Length: 223
Image (cartoon, rainbow, N blue to C red; front, side):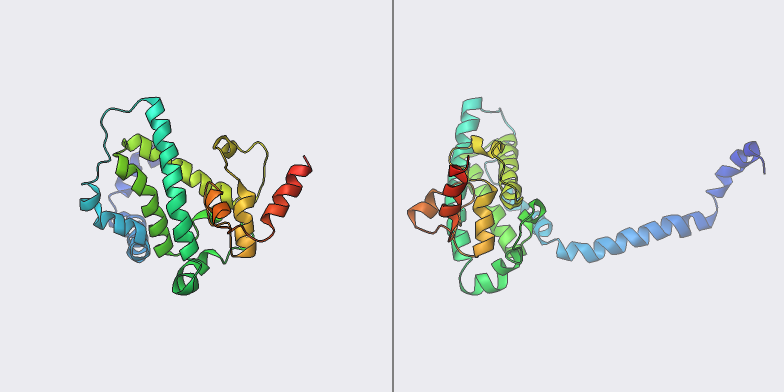
């Protein structure tokens, strides 16, 4: 069959019942069964759908964007509040049932890489995500400010697990930010260095990971 004849015949091929049964039917079965099996495991997405009526009552809005200095102040507040809440949640998860059945999953990682930042039990993921929303809900943040904050929070999660300590890390624009070495010690030593962005609570409560301060001082002296 020459090319012009094949082109003329092409529309009739798509009228063949096997077109709907073979490629399209197979695609539908493949996609449908994947979703059927995947949806029950996608706990976070399911929960978000179920709690949407409650989230809709939150003061998060799409109104007028606040002034830039308000955005900066809100982001600073979110970092401080989230770090305070996360420190205590994280420290609590290193005890008893929560450590054995929940947080120990995240601590299967002994040598961190960036993608490991969100490798955790669904309960821990929901708790971590829930803490990140408290600040924006308290101030009634603009939706775009919420997105900026979540991007910062995810940056901290990936940078904290990346395993690389770079002096030019843009995270150091945040005052007191420690970088990846801080959380590396947490995974290596299992206890200590519970904070996320900032180390002040570990300093105040004397919960630095064993050997971290000596490593930090030696690194600074070598510069």
